[in-house]
Length: 87
Image (cartoon, rainbow, N blue to C red; front, side):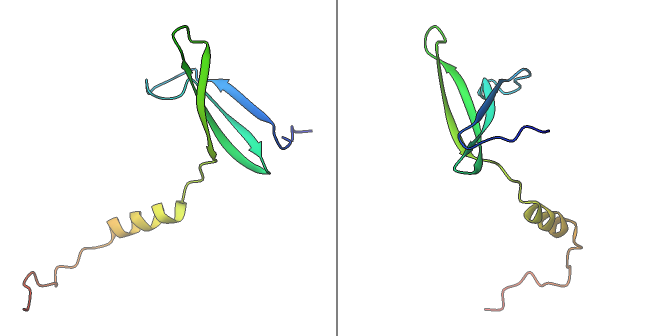
């Protein structure tokens, strides 16, 4: 049986391959009010004893917008348009 998160559950993991020095040191997910959220935490303080961070809605890519942009960019360009302004 797979793990089923309950409302209020949170899971956070240390970033192993941190590529961006300004990126979070810890990442995770939480279930709040039935909606999945992303969590990002940074180590703060002189001795690294504090974690500060954000909770935001889960990122869902807009594949339709990306697909439309690709179609527009790959569409043949029209050469029959005039460059002059008629007024």
